[in-house]
Length: 259
Image (cartoon, one colour):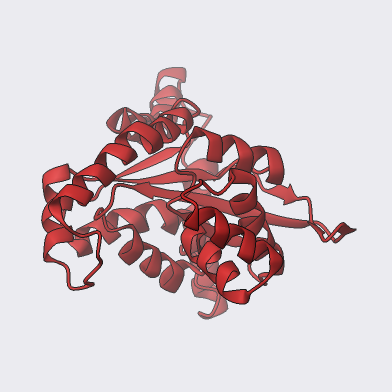
């Protein structure tokens, strides 16, 4: 799903070894269930979950010069520059032993997106977009037990407005590149994860290499057989084309469903 790209590993001015990573942006309105599903993806598919907000808070807590600068900007009501956040994300990827990352709630706007691509030279594998009606997200936020101070009706609706105005253009940008996987996040949690699994399973879960050799090879055959065995080119031209259509139709139908 997409092409692996190299992160330019540079920390404190020192050139480090290149590291090839896969990045998936996870976007959705407040209350769309991103956090819950990110935890499921981490558990089932071995991705590392990165939250820009968590990284900013951790940097502040560290007491570093960078953290003090971030804290002062927030206190003064200023917006932390996109490049600062991007470099925290980049450092987290560089320092991780993993090569697959979910970046949650980022980029929040087009400026974030441009900064991420310019600094890291990474184009995401795809954007996992949790699409959910505002009424449902509002109901979830008001009912949840996290006790967040901003979970009141006025601030919730302001957050919806910010998401629509700032983050949806990011989704639309990647949609124009064919890089958005849209999930109906208004369904029950289990059904939502079922849809998520359908996206991640073909690459990350289809072969269980811990099984006996014969079973592993059976799984490998299941992947390659539809392409390599399905067409008997010795048949008449019309029948051969019928077999070709059988392979390509599921791809085209799936694409049409996402339009």
